Image 1 (cartoon, rainbow over the protein chains, first blue to last red):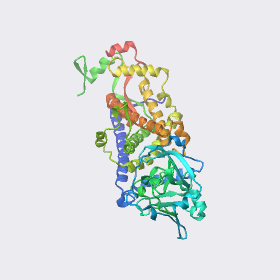
Image 2 (spheres, each protein chain N blue to C red):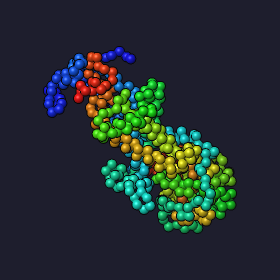
Image 3 (cartoon, rainbow over the protein chains, first blue to last red):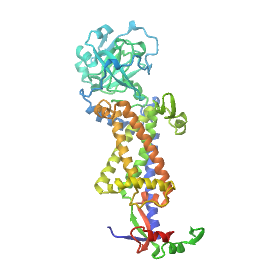
Image 4 (cartoon, chains in turn brown, purple):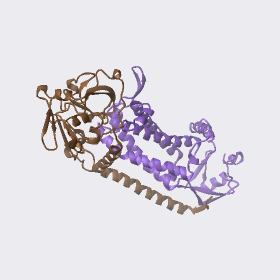
Length: 253
Length: 263
């Protein structure tokens, strides 16, 4: 037992008041810091974004989880019989306008600024991969869905895009740039990342991104861009639709 | 002047002490300082309070985007999580991105603070005051009956009574549960094994949500109990000490004989 401490009434009051002043100073500095962060201008201006200190933490999170993600980390797959016949259609940014499939092609801008233009038939000639996995929407719901197409890594290999694969990021956009996403190269080259032209063994429906969409199971659904028209490479982050509107850039699962 | 009411008669403080401690010599001017909550515990507590509040608030902002949970059977819903009025009252608008940003930033403080708390209580021996034993469950029942004014006397206790021990240990385990289920739904591919262990993505998400509701219920009961216990109890989590009356020859424990004096 420690030595007994006896204080007078006045000393007790003094000790109590000092403790409460310290408490008040600490708590209010916490509240002040929070209010200060809340009032900071958002990092993407008019479109929104998040406050810079919060963004720093999100970017630090990316650095942690991007380093630990490997091609051995695979999204759980399911038998195709479990796939939903009519998966939910959640986004139409970039695919809401009139669309003439005959004018579509996939344009890949190479590092030397030359464009590689591929037709759907070109893409379908590459080895086909299917995946049936639990598609996860950033809103919180998930659905087992079944897709078929070409691995992004297979396409890169088939067209000798080795120097492009050395970039840090891939950018993908609809032909009209209404919707656009950026992916780190590790996630893009992941063995489950597909450019899909089939859903449930049939050609992709128009509202699921016909003729070609990305399926990237290691990310939330917002990164799985529909009706991909443009692909480009960069060492800086390519523009990303939801990032500009206040979401994390990485969004890795 | 302070006065005290005993059986409808008022007494001055001096008179009261003379009656209450008839056979003991009570000092009115001196107080004994009894150390109650170590500084570290007070810090952990007061850091956790706003951070947990932020985590719950941002969690609701995330949940809003797909608010599908309910309690019911068949088509009958007994309780919907949550009715629109809930979001209106707490000012939780459609800001999924903002909610996620705060959630995945402040999770670090919540996690590190919780981890340090567990390490501190484990290494300092403070855990002995908190972890329940066999008697605690029976005692918790007696405390409940006492709190509901069904039982007259509160059971004897050390720093915390049985009900508190169970509650404070449960809340630490719930915090651990929130971290684990949170990680499972945050990185269901990289931590796929954890996600499967917790019953899959959707189930882990339900667990994470249920734990949050548990935290809310804990906070409500905790605050109600603190109000009930009074100011002197509350101030010890700020100051760290309790100032006791100095009673010479004060018996170690409350016994039948000195209980009669108080009555």
